[in-house]
Figure 1 (cartoon, rainbow, N blue to C red):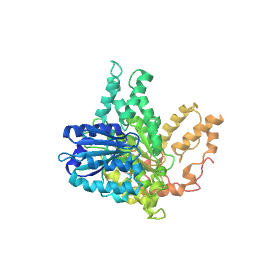
Figure 2 (figure 1 turned 90 degrees about the vertical axis):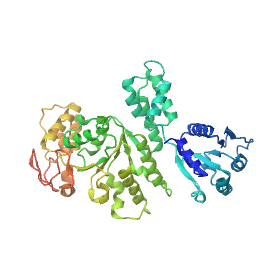
Figure 3 (figure 1 turned 180 degrees about the vertical axis):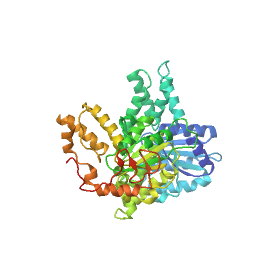
Figure 4 (figure 1 turned 135 degrees about the horizontal axis):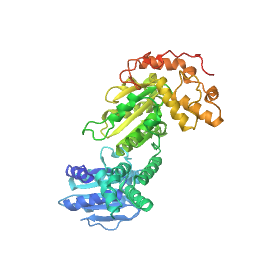
Length: 496
């Protein structure tokens, strides 16, 4: 439903206080003006720079540009015996700290029921004083959809060859979540830089937009599945869940990855975006926490709204237990901020209809609330164990090639090594110009330094999670190419 359609419904229902949240004021004003002309309604707009001006059928005298009170009172003169009169106040949230302005708005909203006059605040944020909370209805001015973005791209790239049809899908995916103004600028930049519309400048601009919000980070260049050894069942599931051409209404929700630190959970989340052609957005929960009352909740809603606008995409939250652990313990030391953050995320995970695939990673499941991993919040919960012999062989080969090492040289004993530890050994061998067995003297496996934690995590996951390396449920002590998985205990011997 468009902004004009929503506004028309509320005017006919006589909601005389309307707050439109929009980042594109000129487009919103143009849409409102077209509606008023078609309906025969009067329309005037006021801002502190230009003062009061008529936009559709309104006869208004010049109003002092710096006086918001006079602008509000001018609404009385706009009333007509038939039809409706709308006064749009642009960026008016800046003036709502004044009690006189608040009282004047309250009076006009109440009298508008009889006079059919409407106060419309147009602002990028919703900051309604407590005295006016019950008088205003909030309407969202949505970001442009794919159809509008395509029309913008074609209107700018009007010459033959400037809009390659085989590039159109990638361009529209890259433009999703941008405002009309931003999309026009990105398409123009692409024409200047490449002579045609390409996705690169749009991704560049989108990355800058996310940096301005400070809530999400665009991850690009995280490798592909070919750069990850093992995890065959996990790769197969996600590839099928995010395949193009799925039936309408059958959307993938996301996965929760539990596992030993260093087994590739974060790397998998980044590689999935490159493998499926989706942007990967990294959600920094620490950045969501604000110092002011209500700031954290507002940041959560804004970040999830950005993710929805950028769909199809992948939303990645690393080490989610560190952000939501307080909700499991019932701690109220943060005045309930953590619990409200957790509740907002839970609601979104259950209810969101956008094509956003959420990936959460976790190293300590005991700190997560039990309701977090229930069905219909995640499509699956996977456990990533220490790699077996076949997976370690793949990882050794990948990193030996990456760091220019001789793949035939002797390797250290790697029974309980993670993929991160194998990579560290290869990197140190190249850095120090020593054989792998000598570089291994600088690597202490997590299975040795935190053996009890690894076993505790394995025990919890057994029978509760799916196995990432083979189809079916993970079973502690299940057979691998190494033979039965042996128990890892603190103090087990290592190359160190």
